Amino acid sequence: MTATDNGSGTARTEVNEPKVLREVHGQSGHLRLNRPKALNSLDLDMVTEVVEGLRAWRDDDSVNHIVVSSGHPKAFCAGGDVRAVRQAVLDGVPEQGEKFFRDEYEMNAMIAEFAQSKPYIAIIDGIAMGGGLGVSMHGSHRIVTERASASMPEMAIGFVPDVGITHFSQHVNTRLGGPSSAIARFTGLTGYRLTAADMLWAGWATHAVPSAQLDEFVAALDRDGIDSALAEYALDVDSAEARELLGEPQLAEWSDCIEACFGADSWLEIERALNEAAEAGSCASSTVETFRDLLAPANPESLVAAVELYAANAGPEVTLQEALNREMKLGAYMRQHPNFAEGVRAVLVDKDRDATFKPASVQEVDVEGIRQHLS
Image (tube, rainbow, N blue to C red; front, side, top):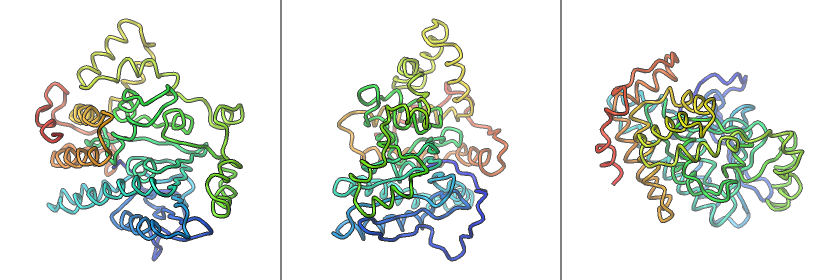
């Protein structure tokens, strides 16, 4: 899930248009997210339409792969429609929100399963947040342009990272040479917005294609298939051309400090590591201050809960389905608390970004209550 904003600046109308456009072109089954006024934030209808596309094309021999993209000039998918979930809670019908999450997580698992048999290609040309990562990261190919970005900003809305990201981000290989739970936890706890270069470095993206060549790339996908299209249009990410277009990954520069501070299995240990790094000078003071600034809007309960969730889903034996089940249980627990409604209000409804979270400190958080929902 994630926070989403309205107002896309687009003049397109959504009247009578499907929220997901489903078409076959050549070898490709296309799913185009089409809710521009909400920056393609996912609702239950969109989840259902994606699932129907997966089912229709899973055993269709004429469709060699699925391509998921957006028609919005700035957004791939800005997450799940948490305002609607909040309203359901306030209206006394939380089961409506629970159905959305249940169906969304089933879609996430189905995407991962589909990608085991056919390529599932997500083209991220703009922002991808929360649920937008759920509809892209579990695929086999995650294509970014220089305009791509990704984030999990759940801490500020009183929630926790979900859609399987607590599993994916801890098991995918980074440019450090393997998976990094510290990098994963940093991204989830801080809500840091990864650039395209960061996404490639962290393993969240598999390939990069210049935005100016996207139309030609998609045409090649339809005509020739994924391998030929990538051979012709994908950048060598270590080349000077790629560095000039994408920039350098900030995560690489911060990686030593992130590894030193964010690898622990409890929030109090992470907080202690940040304090010690600042005092000992093992991390640049400006870097530690940047990390603290990123953490400042977070709900204290969300910080504690998120670290417990990441720790539970970190082991190599943990499956995506097990991780999604834990996210579902803990997420339901978090949504029962007033902090969720308050966080969504502050970020997305009133937009004053002045949430009053209770408890106000991590020391007062009921850690055992959280752990009971992870067993």
